[in-house]
Image 1 (cartoon, rainbow, N blue to C red):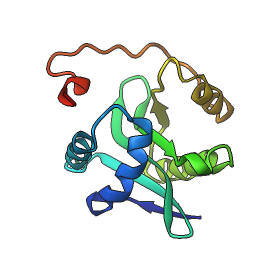
Image 2: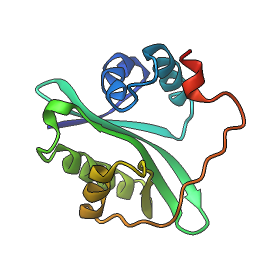
Image 3: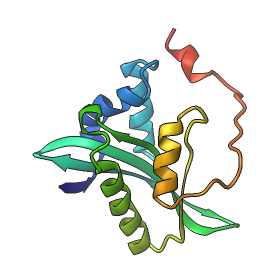
Length: 148
C-alpha cells in the first residue's frame, strides 16, 4: 500500500471515485467542486494506492472546535467498489488518524448519511461514536439543481 496526499493534478483519478459516492451529480459539477476544495489551505485529500492504482480516498478539513480543540473533519471516504470489504477502509482511516496525530489534532470527526447503515457499522467498529445531529439548510442553489 502506498499513501499519498492528493493535489489538484490528481483530480482525474479522484473523480473516478467521487462519482461512485455522488452518482446523481454530474462529472462537470464534481470537477468544479473538487477544484474549489483544493483552493482552501485547510483542505487535505488522502489517497490509498494498490499497484499504482488509486483505490480509495478521503478528504478532510483542519478545524478547531470549542468542544474538541484542533481536529480533522474527514469527508468523502470512498473505497473503489472492487476493493470494498477487504480492509482497505480501515487501513486508510488508520493512516489518516496517524497523520492527524502528527499534526496535533485531538479528534477526528465525520458525517455519514442516515440511511447508510453499512458505514455506521464500519465507523462504530473503528471507535467512532455518535455526537449529535447534522443539520443543513439550503440558502442558495441546491447542488442537485445544478445538474439540470
